[in-house]
Length: 119
Image (cartoon, rainbow, N blue to C red; front, top):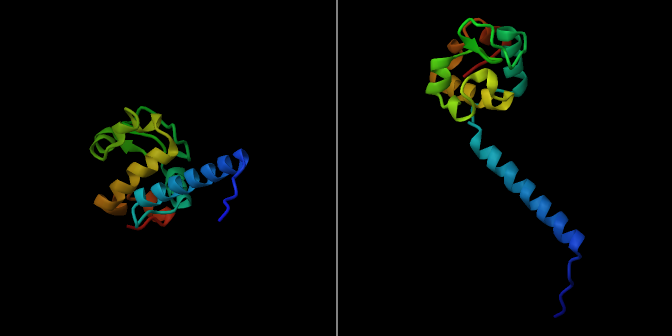
């Protein structure tokens, strides 16, 4: 049997595809099964903070989803950033999914209804 050799370019492309598949599989396993859509979280943020994921208005609530500091810390947000407004949108959503699973949509009593957020 003869083996054909892959060109260096083919090896690099194959490696990149494999890395992408591994990353996608990893993401898929870290999102909870009940994850709300990104557009739903954007709607909650639009209601809570006018869609400003960096919101810090001095009212004791932070980020696009207006986390209380105690909630941010209790659900692991400080692993991403000291306060929610310093975290990325994706990081805020990751913490919000944990809050949603534990507390349900009542964590955002007005905006969850407007945005159609469900547990």
